[in-house]
Structure formats: structure tokens, C-alpha cells
Image 1: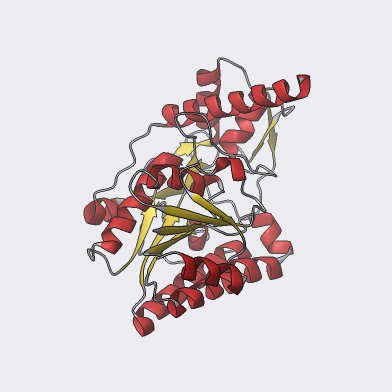
Image 2: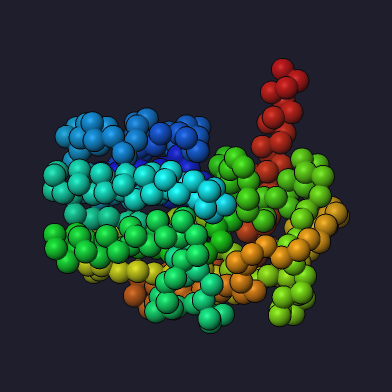
Length: 331
């Protein structure tokens, strides 16, 4: 059985939806940002917190856990800067509690959900796993701390782990039953689609004078279902002994500008966006694009979804969500 902590969140719930096809799954989530309805009905669910030892002991003593997939974290960059205590407590300290419980119960396989924020503002446009990790905010530092803890635990205690550094996750499950649902929403694609649905008045674009082809920032976007497949491949490699410890970037390997994202959203929806150009935000690099060659070479994983497919799946999810809300209000 696989324990998925944070399995009611955006990425975790998509991984669970695929994982239940191959394994028995139990989800542990405190539902602070996740949603009970997002958890596949084939998975067991326990509402609890990885920072609470009694919750963990209950699961590890009740079920035979073969591996843990860790998605539970606070992830708002702006909030992390003004409330670092929350991020070090909930991300770092709680993860140590989880690792302690795993060691106590003899569980040695760990998949960790990390982030491209560990790189900070790199000097190179094409980011490999060898790129210097110099995070510029508390969120990125908290994730990097956990990465370093995993390396130490692997060396000292024999922990097997795979760390996956995501770039910009986007899109939704093909059924449109689950998708991106954050409060507050800070990601570009859902913000644009919410605007095109009439939920937001306009779109703010921060900076149009970057050294890029159209002057707006370039980022690497990856479909959440591509991420899900990468997690399952990493888990299988760990359980089969093909990998002992590894760090992989997960991205498309292609960069898309803010303008390109908005234009593709307009093409998919057939609607026109109202754009407000604002000053640059401090600390926003002009371009961040992942090299995912290492994970392709070692695990055979490669992103499959195009930008149009990513946005089309997200549009179906957001449109369905709005229709559901309207129906609830009418009833």
C-alpha cells in the first residue's frame, strides 16, 4: 500500500487517480488547502496531519505501507516571505515528523514533491539538476532544506528517495472531475481562464520589457497528468531497486511567454482577454525552462501534452466548475 500525504491537493489528487489503477492507496490530508471530493473513491482517506505523530502512527500500524509520496506543503511564495514560521513549521518540521514515523515503522521509500523555486534566479536559461540552488524566498528554502535532509537520511539511514522538482504545473484530468482549485489562485493559466469566464475583471501582466521575444516572462508549463506519470515511474523505479536516490527536473523543455499563454487561452476559448500591463515584480527572472533530459534518460519519462492540450483540459475543468456553482445557487 502507498501512503499519499497531501493527496487531496491539486497534484496529489491527480497522482492518486492514476496510482489507484496499480496499487492500494491511502491518502492523508488535513484539508487545509485540499478537497475531500478530489480524492478518488477507490483510495482510502484519513483526515489528519503529518505534523501529528498519532495520525502517522495510526496509519503505519494499521496498514502495511511500502512507500510514501509527499505532496503536503504550504506553497504561496508571497505568504512565505511574510510568515516564514508557518512555512518552516508546516513544510520542514512536519516532514521531519513524517520521516521519523517512517523510520520507526521501517518504511524506507520516499517520493518528494519539490519545486523549481529551489533554483532561485539562475544564471542560465536552460535549467539542469546541476544548476546552482539558491532560493530567494522562504518557500523555496523550505523545500531545499527538505531535499538536503533526504540526502542526509539516505546516507545515514539508507532512506531511498526520489525528489521531483516541478516547473509550472497546469491542466486538469481528462474527465474534468478534478483540476486546479486554489484559494487564492496565483497561477497564470487558471487566472486567465477565470477572467475569460467572467470571474475576474481583467488580467494583470507584470512587465513587458524583459529581454524575451515579446517582452514578457517565459516559463515552462507541464500538464498535471504528465507529472502524475512521472511520479508513478519514480515510485516503480524506487520499489524495484533501479534507483536508490535521485533528483529530477520535471518540465516540458519548452518555454512559453505570458503573452503566448494568454493568446492560446483566447484561441481555446474563443474569447478575448482584457490585459492590464503593470510594473515588473521584484525577483521575476526573464526565463525559466527545465531540462528534463536526466529523467528521460534514467526513467524513460517525457512530457507528452502540448500547451494547447494543457489549456484545453484546464478550460473544460474551469467551465464545468463554474456551471456547477451556478447550478448550486439556482437550487
